[in-house]
Image (tube, rainbow, N blue to C red; front, side, top):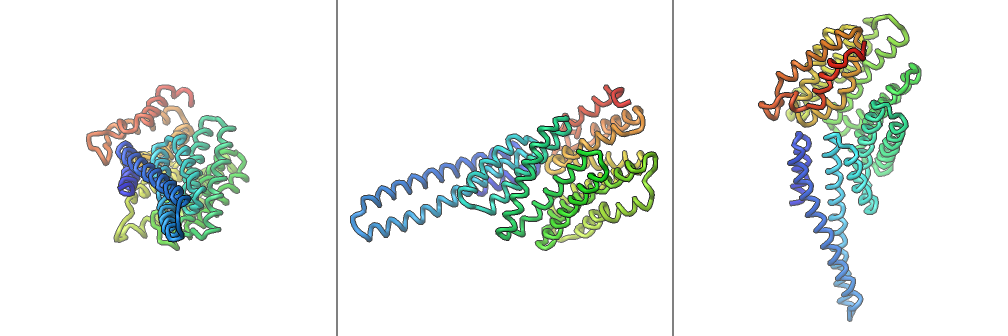
Length: 397
């Protein structure tokens, strides 16, 4: 029953039903805590009997019982650790990152005591991603010292997870670690204005992403493959920005745009096309289709084609926001990119028009899970920023 409840909770969290998911994970953890404590009591009682055993036959029988109970206690404790880890996932998906890292730390403490290396990898990698997101959020708030602190924690966690993968041969989960390291190094691109350093961070990011892509394909892990292809695509518009920074006042040449399309955006496009006809299409396939639209829009933006860029951003961000699970998580993750694009538009009137277009689309569009709920109502935190940008538009003139 605890396993069923925990897995149901995780599945519900993936579809954005966080309250229902949390209730099941909490109940699973409570069952597992009770089971662990009961087994510990039984073992203590066996130890007392061993001290009073009158013959070797009794000693042997009690030792066998103790061995069985200790094996059960190990599994019960490990299972409790997985509940804490699932709790961490649920809060990370909601963006409640401080609570997520706390639960990951609880899980990691259990897994280390048990020498459960596979599960250490899972907890370290996930906590590293939460630390990365914290670093990114803090940098956006211009809290650079705190951002560097969490960036360092993220690097340590993800690097440790990859080391364990190499030491113990966990090839099947190494792809995720490579992707997360690539994502972390990509974040560092945004924290320097030096084009040479930016080039280096993008190159190092791509190296890790390519390693992860190979590992995912070796294991036929389609979901991870698409995740990594999306990360590779997102490097594309950054290469375009570097070119424009090095050539002020010049538009992105067609040759450079085609090169970026082939080496970055096109890889995700080909991956989506390849897996669209799979017998079992991954649950979040539509999310990746919208991420492709997002990166297509980003490349058009860097090519100064603002009308087509706006259409692509409207379609992609609305499509992501309509999915209250993973799509919304990705919408939140990339929202600062959209705001930055609005800030970089050539004039204040264009900025206001973009915001008005998003307000109109989000007030008209409904969510996938509840046709009576608009996207605007589902994401009041994001929607409010569009309104705010119109009210204080003079700040961007």
